[in-house]
Length: 120
Image 1: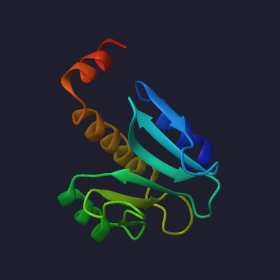
Image 2: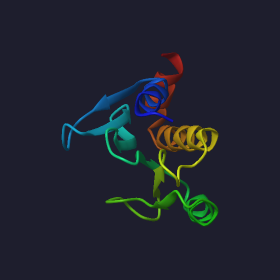
Image 3: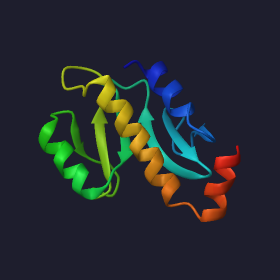
Image 4: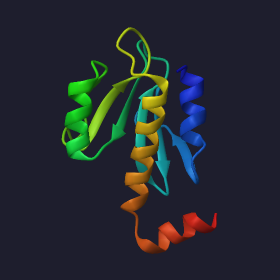
């Protein structure tokens, strides 16, 4: 997956926005102010931090060389996923992981905000 495809996929979710609160190089994708993905889109290899259920995070790390505990994140709830280079996870898996991260963040939003998303 290219950096442009990754950005487009992340921004394709309902109410998703891209911000740069840390550095101009670090894209932070949020839904209603909550982070669901972070990536330096110009880095080689391309990597993205994604939220994950703890049990699934451990399983993914065992199954894929391109999945590691979240860099600069809570290692229990976040993975760093390699999206480019020799250790890249398959694009279909990456898309699933991004969607799962978005869904986990949305599920943690207050009910009123989730309802607002449903109407958007």
